[in-house]
Image 1: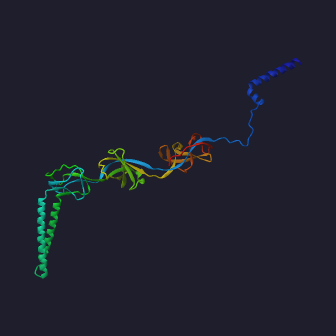
Image 2: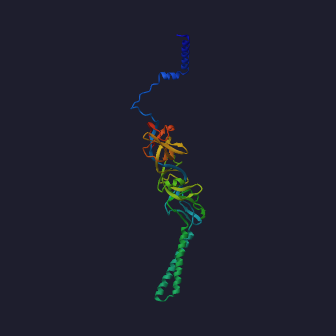
Image 3: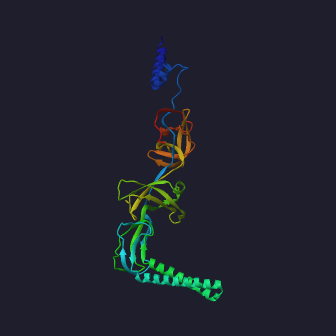
Length: 364
């Protein structure tokens, strides 16, 4: 081979080797292209976003509200005498029970008894004179004017008797209702005036507790609903009661309404003036309940991801209340719907999903 041909061939070989060194990846692709799997008719489609879901349940928005109030007796008065005088008899004692009309205290009443006897004697005489004149008038021997005067005097005498009896009754203090007397410092022989407080007197067979409830709770209460009460005097013990009265208006400054609760006290364990914590179970409306983790916040609103036919859809909701790991919401959800509790970060409306687990739903 001629020398010039050898030189040209050597140059071509050297140039080729240099190009292969600079483009090694391209050369390998040209020499051995990557293998591809042959198409298969039974191959599964790419998997969706893995998520864990939980079923939607329905639950009532029931609320237990605890309010503190002060107890008072169903009927409570401070005893005073209708008249002034010296005490001759007293039956008052702390925690002594009386029935309506029982004598609790008696004042000296000699003068009042004498006045009553005098008034009754005058009445008898006036009635005798009137009767005699009525007989004479029937016989035509008595003047009509004299008879009219006798009738008037008899009526005045009758009124004097009534007044004397009232004065005598004012010397006796009687129980105004069934109840229990409090501590009294009045002793027999003491002088009392009509403005002196003798003792407290209570009907504590039922205790009344007045409470202030917020305006938002008024549509959930009704007279007669059951309540429970606790007091420091009996720790751990519950006393059953009922709601008896709801005030007719709200307090404008606090937006609260005054209610009254009755607590039966047949065993006489409770005392007026004690502090009571009253629990009211306020019934609410049913709402969809979802795990708290399912509720997401985006673009100024709340939503959950519902899975239908392995596709995620965004459902807007409004939070009603949170309670022990779950959330009550308002929204177009039905019992049994599945909502995503894990895997929400990669979801978009219409995303394909793969359910990898199912958790138990909230308690109804």
